[in-house]
Picture 1 (tube, rainbow, N blue to C red):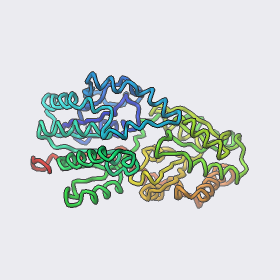
Picture 2 (tube, helix red, strand yellow; picture 1 turned 120 degrees about the vertical axis):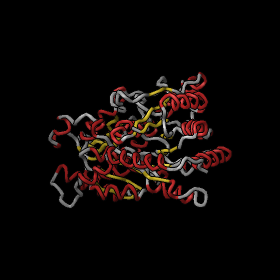
Picture 3 (cartoon, rainbow, N blue to C red; picture 1 turned 45 degrees about the vertical axis):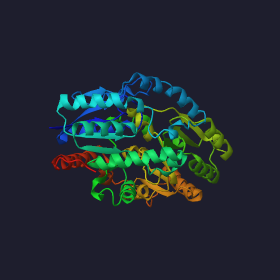
Picture 4 (tube, helix red, strand yellow; picture 1 turned 60 degrees about the vertical axis):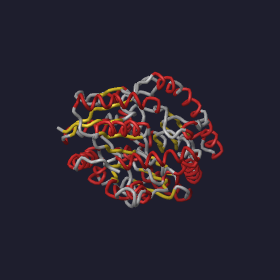
Length: 433
């Protein structure tokens, strides 16, 4: 068994979507010969999901090493800040700093990581980011121990153009300089889409070899979900035709396209609120409710709060259609919910500006897709799905292809990560740069 340090500020029971990738790795890598020791943050002040924590194998050691007193003070306002965001506002502080609220913990977390490397005889350091301060911790441990460093980026950093545009010029400069330094010392940099990998290969051409960048997508793990209950299997005609959006809207992930498509659909089909529902699972900002009112669909809205990880599949399979929105700002990213949608049994309606998402939907037969700005096309596709579910089955609609959907499960993802770690540990011990 090869053992390594996994730095993941987001880790169960922290109940945010970023924790799922690290959870998949600790569950599936030991069977492939790699056992992580996890370095993460304290749980106070964070949204929690105790059910997700129950899926962490008992033999995995988890250390809450991000523990400086100042760091806890900085993190304390998280709930209040979330309330402001739900009220339709948006905090700009996160775009001023090049890092995040865990920056104050970097020194303490680095020391904790160096101790763990010595105590546990670890052979590599893997950082699951963001939060980006985890990269600073991993870099410090790599320099102190000489171990190879692998950076696993769930999202682009310097190449997330929409977020970078909101940052002051000095902040952008710090991010680019620090990212280049960290990438230069890393044995591998993992991106979670092919488009992000190619964008980074191009951005660092002549500075970092192409082969140092890898693409390993997110994944679903069916074992984490409770099986759908009888509610999901009720006769569809006994309830409204339901389009579900799983997750919350925020800056860069706005509801406008989905609201416009759904509004055009219900008007064309002359469906009342008792006949068609748009369900948002994850809460809704007051400003978005006003958008729904202006489009004329406020009566069709059903808003639920966020559900625990284990309830994901139950909630998805209660719907008739699963909606995905990928705006141009996220052209290098794939929303993590797509992998949950692949695990569910309902068809996907993807409003997408990302060809990689389109390819996955087409390849797996998971549903239908159109350009995010094409409201007329989206409404027509939704009408086809409605008639397929409520009037007459449409054999021309795509059908799910199980063996292709299985490619996006956690086991193949872990195979790729294990293969990458094996390559890194076989390379000569040298300072990258």
